[in-house]
Image (spheres, one colour):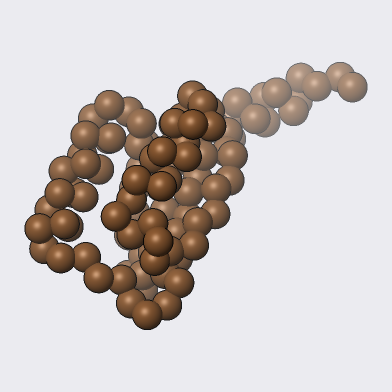
Length: 95
């Protein structure tokens, strides 16, 4: 299942050392390469948005909570679907 994960800073600033940023970037690349992340964006004013593929709630929770900025951000997790698939399903619905 796909999820849109939106993060926003809680305040007080987000501190991510250069070494941590390099490590975090490498981890994001691995997640992209393994198709767990379809897209990742940073908000210029702070925060981020990710399109995540997770098969279980445990996998989703681990992905969200493993961020080095987890404790300094709020998180919104929204289940999403491909728009074409959704609309085709809606058009075929007979209920």
